[in-house]
Length: 115
Length: 111
Image (cartoon, rainbow over all chains, first blue to last red; front, side, top):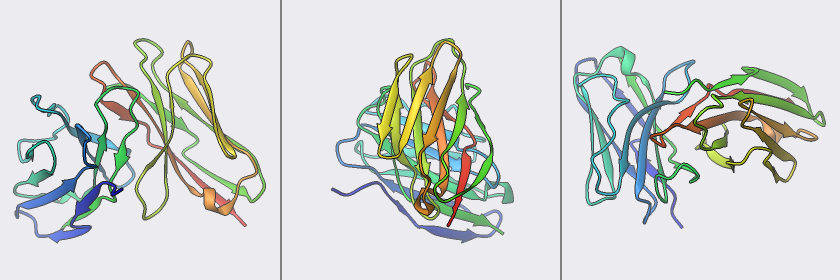
């Protein structure tokens, strides 16, 4: 079956512009995660959606970052007024449920470059 | 947020060598330990999920062990091949079940 997909694969934007990153999780997966990896850093958790529960936004680095998940499926991560430090690879992952023993299935990522 | 550490940061080995690297995590309030392989230009791919102290998992030439009492897991690769070149990530979920990832061990296998 289809895996997790993300779009665009690459995004170059100018400082101060808004960007939207899209994630299509595996059908039927109730848990969805956003991470980012900045150069030389590990995977940094951003936000977690589980079913219809309120998302865990504890990893969002600033109020310029927001995300939504529509119909329990597709998710969009929005970064407003982008800054150069937002440049990173943004990864989306989904799992069957959010239980600790479930493996995560990752998308190919979106490489964001802010000039 | 948990403190999950991996060592070494990078590793160069020759084809045919066996190798291992370490993931350390807090032993208190342990839920699970995940290993992922992340090849360049691909998505991270799950290797193992381990939950019980003393767990050993194996997939082909790759195996992993878990010691929850002392807070570490080893990943072993027997007879490394160039296609094993990747970054190996470990992750441990905390009480919120959100995993904290280590920075990874970058393995390069030279033919």
